[in-house]
Image 1 (cartoon, rainbow, N blue to C red):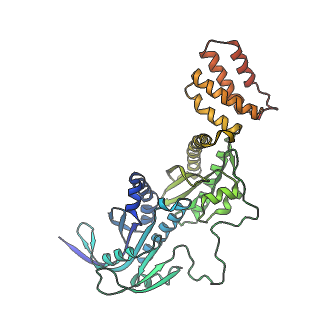
Image 2: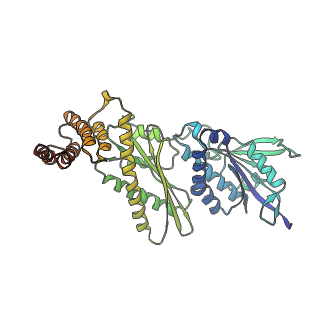
Image 3: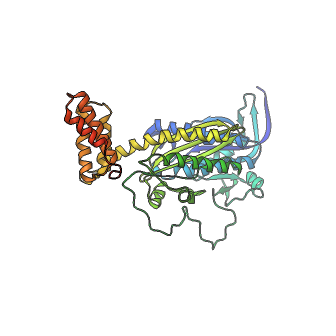
Length: 422
């Protein structure tokens, strides 16, 4: 078998506590790992000129042409994971450990890498803290003058099955290198002069600034324009209150907890995402979260070419808005079902009525009509409830005997005075 020796920057990573995560919900963890690899990890490796040598279950062995590229790649992935884990309970977070070493490796004919260079990187990963990056001394000296890093010198460490101690440096992701000790730490979210807003009774959403994952400043304008288009599209949904761009963009560039965003902006839902450029292609990811719990309601990604940026923005906006609207409605219906009967308001009663209209059968419409009548007793000017109740009476008339009383009632609700009903 032919083999060659060379000096290479080696990155080894794995998931912290993978066995525990897989034991709790193996299907979900595998699906999330596949999504992370396609949306974040593999594109970031490609941008920084890395080569995935092999996958090791939940981990990876990656070769880079320079340590600078390897460290930049690791930082981008770890920062991306901070954002993706925001709002999730600790037991559901996916966190990576990363070890990076510059050393001599043996490349075999099939492209696999062997030798001490690989072994040391793997051992560095093993002693790394969750969400951090550990560098060998050889790797550290390559980047210390080129990147602004906050480094913790852990001294000489004995690594398993490595003959000589290795000096290890732990990289603190997201912390500036030379921050003044007396300076106050930057808050995770902006300080708000006003008190926290109560969660609304009606559905409301904040669209956060999409993250520019490419590091290309030109993509910042595209990402911001994309969000503005989505805000405009969502604003056309009459039953949904959308927070203005100026309010939601104060969180731009911050790793925030969506639950805190929900409390501070007084919204029930948060839409966030990212934009990544590779060559002449763009990938946009978006995810919808329930602000109160941080639970994911929906997530997807969209790919497109840069030939016509505005056309691409329009296409993605239409797709996102078209999926967000029914997703929010389903979530609102489930939320109303969870509420205690004594706490129901007119809107909750309307939501409880909606699923019963799916069959368009008199028996189900009768249940919906009872709920809608209760809603109108609480709010006689509730136009949407009047409209749905008119449909109930149309079903009674057409499918249950052509009773003129049903026809008259349906017309009366349908003709609800616009100046009186909202």
